[in-house]
Image (tube, rainbow, N blue to C red; front, side, top):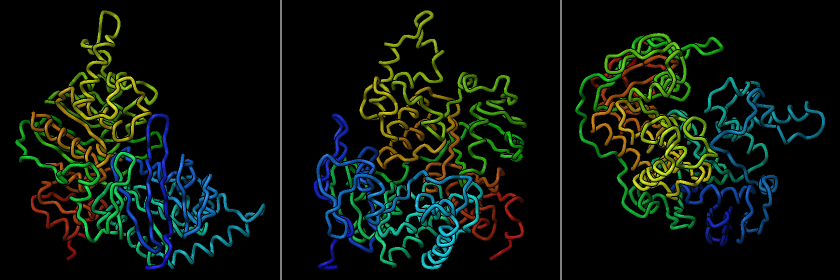
Length: 531
């Protein structure tokens, strides 16, 4: 591409928020018709840099060039006009609108919608054929899966004539099959001359789909390398400044007695939809049971029942003693009193009070503990000192007990929640999406803490949409689909293809080939004879 101007060139970009230097003198060149990855730890400045490019923030200094032309981007409308589109990790769609209505929203031709809708329908058909972006234009957003919703976001950007696409953690809620389809779409876009910036913490994806990758650390650009000339280990070391073990280093489990037993558990929501269907499972002391599945297939409801957040029918016992499921004594505080700790899936909505200080959040759920009482009052000084100790042990940055939870990065918020729950030495740890949005160094640390708790004799129930995490961390795996268990067996004999089939509710040769696995009759039994 000698002589070709970069699709994007950032020169000397700096941005500070008060005393925090989010970006410091960053320069980067992204060539047209390529997929350029950007990786870095939480708080490294990736999102800030992309927010500057998309017009959400204004840089304190520096210049932006689009296809060789110096461009000022004061807001997202200017970014769109410059041919830049962004697909956010959390989609920006109107749930009760159709695909077509979402695509034209904000890009209507005039007061009359009918001409806009007709033109959009024709353009969507063309884009679907050209880039393998097939979506029913008349489908309502709330009725389609997350993979389809993501395609709508990409279509929105392409409909607005974007030739530069920024994708932020695009595979976080996709099945392996959906992720593979997304990669085919990105490959088609690249072959069609589009330029793509991919922000992800998944090194496997970086190696699989990108042409070049830039690494950020503490607000600075540390390296840009050709993907084919690097390795996951080298990228991980560039991200955190030290060697990182990419797989969990753990000894074989030494399971003890059954800690948790779940029998015929059923949950129906307020709309009358059955979310759990006769779920039965058990976990022993000293083992990690992983629950694999696409988000929305009952894993969240299972965690909520076990954590005392919703009612159910069936039977649950902890060390042989029944747990109330009726709602009369099924609150989270009573669960904690019995030795159940819970790291919820959504740290901001369920795990933290965002406006409270870190030390107040460490007391969250444990504020009645006698250790934090001084007569009728809380012993704030003792709690603050304990928070400082936890922050040091779990490498929370900055290690400031007085900082509000909302002012920590997502990864450090997660460390606060994990520290609070693991440091209670629970009998049973419920942990949902433990490393969602967390960087590679923090992932390694959190995984090691979970394994250490297992080795101390705790039972661990792990829910994650990351198959790599399930396979690396778990001793046994259960797969859920549509509120039912499709199969269970040892993690050591599982494979991503077989798990992917079960996650889609199907059996088949790939699942029966997994030694030691029990496949449920609910797993499309008519498909199990294939192959």
